[in-house]
Length: 456
Image (cartoon, rainbow, N blue to C red; front, side):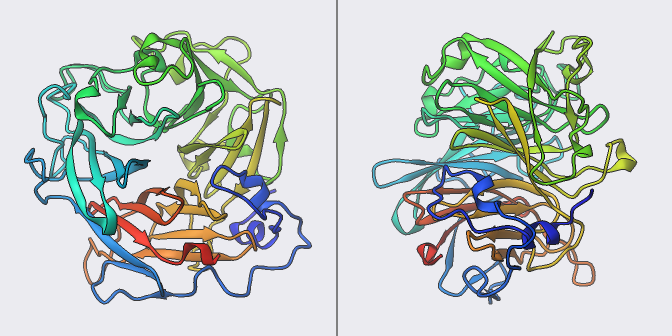
């Protein structure tokens, strides 16, 4: 049965008292159809129109623009690159370090400058920048963290405080101006430029990467693949030879495997929130480098593997990994239609659970379609970065089953008659949850948002 976003959220309970940043999404959404409907005071109150036309927030909240594309970087390395995407925040002594992806293709207006010693392929325009942010949102440094990579979409932080940046691209050397193969993961040190090695972690696979999450208990890295055509992407796990080994340990290699759910070749056909799929297995990837055949097309034997359209956000919480499928469309080859799913996988029980399904209705009071980056707030509740059509929001869902808009992008990149707004990405909290860092993809903008977070 197809369940709309409105039905799912209206039937969600409020069991999640005491949820922390690493809490389980299941706790947040637990409940049954008899639960009270969404209502009451919504989040932090209505959004207040920004007189500067940049970012609408609830009363009591304020934003600081940390960075804009095209402006000169304080490092002197060139202009701030375009296409702000995935991001993480890392703590330091009185400072916060941000590492930000730039999903640049060859037509990007501002490429990531090819800085010496951190450039993988001079023919590629993507990469990461790093910002050192002090009190009051003052940016002390902004520099290139890695360059010469392609279409850096998302990634994820490691327990040893590095950033794994993912190429959503699988072009080989000789394509366009590329001198090297692409489709890899690279490790970036947010604190020091000199420690980043611009070499791919080849054992983790060559495919259209989206995001990763690391199990801090054993170092297993989970990876999503956002492939654009059939058969769609896979959900992977990488079992490193040196688990929890610290910076550079992933270069020692390991085993890459793809998820197989018995009897479910396509996750989109599962439509009932709360469905639990048992006996999840993992099949070894025959050729992680995809020398001749893309991984999703390789022969995994009689059992096969499980595919999904638009596998995107991925993060670790509590004792499980969560991942997002932004949408599925029958007309594009999926087994069923949906407007976004959140899944959780529990390694200890080999269980895969469909946590929530988003529906087709667009309503400022409801999370919009096509969830992309997603995270848990330190004070409880879910944050959803929307990447759909029309107005773009960051939504929150409280532990009291209230759904609210936290932010709206007001930067119109269309026309007055046909307005258009860039997606949100890279939501991340740091320093006890006092600040949320957030990107707008286009025009590339990074914000620090402060306010009465603990009021909820």
